[in-house]
Amino acid sequence: MRVVILAHGDLDGLAAAATLMAALRRAKGARARLEITQPYNLYKALARLLAEPPDMLAIVDIGLDEASWQSTSSALRDIVERGRRVLWMDHHIHTIRHGLELAEIGVSLLYTSSGCASTLAREAFAHLTDDPAFYGKLTRLGEIADGAVKGEGEFALLADRLAAALSAPSSRDEFKLRLVRMWVEEHRLIDDEVALRAEEYEKALAEKMAEVEDRVVVEVRRGLLLDARDLRLSGFAGHIASRLARERGKVTALVFTPNEREVVATCRVPYNIDFNAVDELAPIAAELGGGGGGLEKAASMRVPRELGDEFLKKLADLFRRKLD
Ligand SMILES: [Mn+2]
Image (cartoon, rainbow, N blue to C red; front, side, top):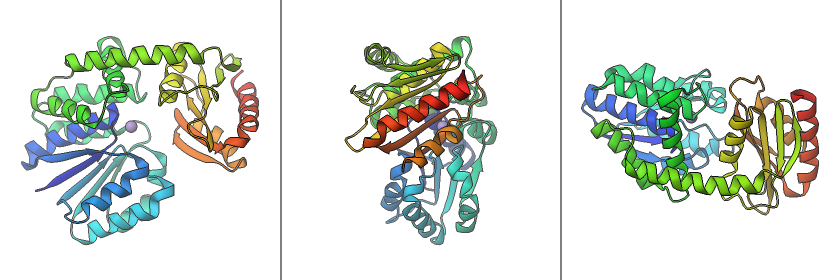
């Protein structure tokens, strides 16, 4: 049986993919090929598979992207109509909102809103692997990294190290695929390369954090809003927001300029604060002709660049109203 897994390249996605790979190997004798992809280019990955679709395709921790859904759904339909099996494991809200269409196409959906992809992988597949305890631990790290559970002690340190290494500026897909191979082949969670990459990431993050920290627009009891539109954050915005949310224990929104057309607010919510970032921020972005999505505790919204001031003003109002 030929199996392809398309997974998100963060710790949650990779831990879930590794667990599925191990289960397929032991239960079905199948060696899955792993590819890393993103919601917005899932349809391209599917198109590449169309020439010779695998017997089974698994989509892991990739949220359904509304903008490319037409192309994605028609590629999925093609694959299923050729007698192939498709499994989609996810925890992103847009995916379940298309649950009826996925069922109609014939895609099997494994979904949770209370955990993440690693939670699903542990519950569905860890018992089928050659080492349930190892995959239990690995998927726990995926959950910690995704903020689905709070990490303690050794688990928190390991999850931090791995998540940091995956985010290092120089970490490409080859490193991620090698990491998954190490987990599956050797049942080892971490090695020297992970440690070095984690250090590289921490250094780069510390430099960016130092620049961002004096860009506070609003700081209230449970909220922190920053305007970093004039800084180059080179892919670190989400990481900075996550770190600040965790260190300060506040809902943190970081507004920045990823390109010349848009302004983006990326928001992170500490696990113990009841604030749904998608529900609270999406209407504001929509009002300004923008949009976005994500999860209750980690969401990003974009608006046209010229409306950046207006966007910040509305976010500042929201933070003062809801988080003081
Ligand atoms: Mn995830």
